[in-house]
Image (cartoon, rainbow, N blue to C red):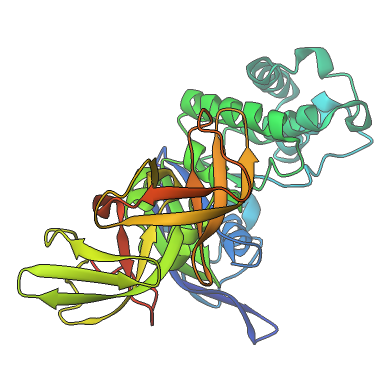
Length: 366
């Protein structure tokens, strides 16, 4: 079994720069796990700790239930696919794919069989005699993957492997990677800063910030119940809208008051009364959950002045102001013609609202 676990792992550079802090994460055998976060959050350091390219200052790294803190990289049964591909320019595709097996003393006949099997899987049969300089970015990426899978490792570690590709090729490679993972039934740990890659590929996501794990869950769990404002804002494009306000509990009634609107909320709403008393909150709502209406429709109805319109063909996003210093992103049906300067009325459905503590940023009904 190729489960991976980091238990209370910390790593600092130069003694003061903490890349990873008390980090714990378990990845089951056969999972496609994604470490997601902005640049500098420590996700690549976690990958290097699993690979053995960095040594943890504290905590344990486990692969297959075995602590591998003192096991050298070449004996961890992992394969790393780097962002820069890291292909040998003086070797052909076939030689690049075979190099790792040759270093492990695998017989030539077996090397040839495994290279042919992997090249067929990745559609590289016609490229085996070419050199990296003769390949496109997508082809180089497939060669880097081929060099990894030819070894049949227990764990695949991928460090932003799609970031150097154009948008269309990235979309195609996402599909190919998922098909490959399903065929191999292997454990994949994929690092990216792109939330679209994470949401479309992962079976489980670990969201990181400043070396700390913010939340682990399925894409749906993280989208529907973000643990804090950072996760809520990082997942989704455009990001979740945040509106400061107060909640006042009056018996069985809960009143929300913001600079843009005020009204009553259903008492059953998660988080609406979890703070236990009157107090400030941050109300969150995703652009796709806001609807355009023709007239006032009770609590949550607000007028917005349109400032920016983004037409993306099948999608249309509108940016505007609903109060002084309060802006909002809204997803609007492309059939609804909207122009800069228009005033449109919106409805913010209470059941789509999230509530966060303004001091800690944590979800109130967590």
